[in-house]
Length: 453
Image 1: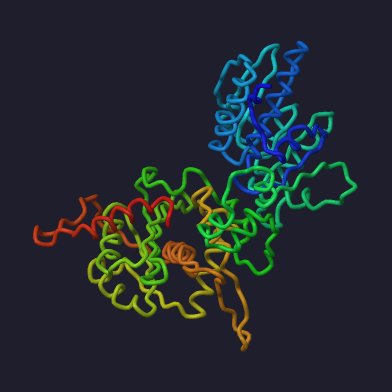
Image 2: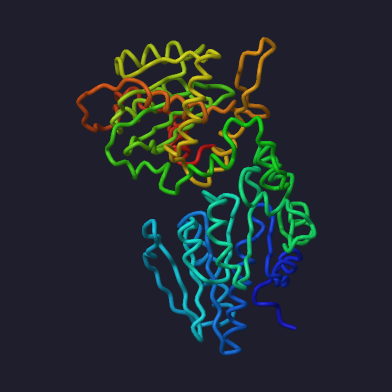
């Protein structure tokens, strides 16, 4: 007997063979939920082609990149495995709120599969079977669901998959609904996936992730308590954008820099926000650990050279005293030191949260370390009743978060006009050329700018 064209693990077979009208999959990360669901989509189109009928599917993903991945790494791969001929098309789909990039394949006898970013506009724009991919991470999930359900109520099927993303979204409501409702629910944590054939080293993954909150949510499918989190996962994901975090996207607008000082155990983080209209875009994030003060200052000087920095706020607490003094000597009043006292942290955290709630920030999409860092910050009351912020079970004490909040604080303060002309990085004298160890550290730091350690 020949091997199947598309081999599946046990839990994937169960999901694939379940043809319930309302089907929900709560899957651990990287267990093949998108791959298996797009296989079902292709299979229904193959069955329709055999019967000389038409099938219609729409895939709604969290962003354009994810929609493209579902189409290129799922639908097209499966269609080729089925030997299904298809025509490709990419176009701007026009809706009530604007145009959205759409990818589409047309199959024999007129079946079509369209993939595009999810929003209330695209959700109401098609009469078709629907696959909501990573639904817990969709912006405005409640509004998307309200727009979508009247469409599928006409008899279409719906597939909803995701890992958890806190409790403040529609996916949580669907996944935790009563057992006797119409939904067929599949729950696959990392332990079940490995037991049924997925080749993963669980202990290696857990050790490498080094974050118990992220492990509990992403791999054990735990619904983390959002009550004490300063920034909920839903709030964080609502401000993610695939265009953020890319230095090449810099448009030349004034920038605001936050710099959180850390050396031995904590990260040294430099966060660059670019002001575009009334929105702050994460343009670059530099992370260093166990760097020398010179290496930290060189990274800061590089940022001040390449961007139009209107104001920079630096953590002045402890070892930051000299860092701030030196930076003010080089850049004057554009640099402000901030002592991390209780009242100052409350002010910065409040400004930061307001920006997230108003959706006037854009941060890197899909950066798991950043998401965990932003979520770990919690507000608690001290014995005297005064509020304070803590970040538990971590090695870096939410350094990325405080760098972001420092940059937001810089954007809220006074700005200064100054002459600006990009210049090359400061050259060292010949006798001060970096050692091999210094050069290796510099290259590691550069690689970390767009993803972190």
